[in-house]
Length: 328
Image (cartoon, rainbow, N blue to C red; front, side, top):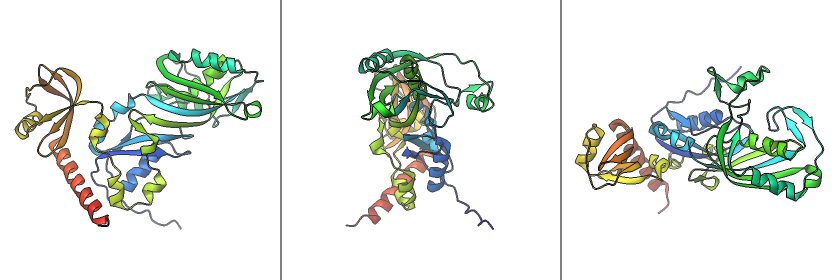
């Protein structure tokens, strides 16, 4: 007989958790596990990682979900291993082998493809992806054996290094290190590199090491999060403004902040800017993203007064719990 499931009492939780996603879990499965551990009532992630991929997965809780799009659009860094000479149905080790070829690749060949795939390139999105066609994810068509026509997409590979592994002569493994724009599929990049080398390839491992300003060294694993008590878990959350660290700050006094939140425009000494982060002065609180026109901050994404109050109370509770648990 199965034991009854423990019912979790959900609550408002606000902030950003930098998770080091483990291999074998989908991004949503990792999100739901972290959401359960934090007892959060609202959560979302900032771009999926394949189940076989690991690495940086920022998770947004509560009001932070309003700003998650900012990191969907962020540049990203990856490290991957690709096996030359073997093609699979999915472009990675999860798929079935569809073709094997002899590998006759020199250092000059690797240098050639490294240059070929650096800069603006076009990619055809893989069938095994979450892109939608007529309201249905492409991977659902792929599971049914249906090939759907996909339009090429323009992406940018900012940096690319393709180097043979020490045992390349027998393993035919190359290490791919790359920094890319949003929307770049690393599985497709590996496949395209293999095609350009004339032997095909598939990824055997993939790790995201950075998204925007967040790096792998800043992340926590699910195992480490699970070993913490509730106060320690909350203390791992970054404030919402971590998502807008590249926005110029605009600080409003108490009266102006109240008017700004109620929809009234306040003019000040701020130059025109396409993206700013607006803060209240007393108490110090993040209020919104905005753009400045003619000296007036105009909201793009605005927090509600209820959200701001909950965030301030959460921060105060976390500070108290952290200070009382720290030996004097």
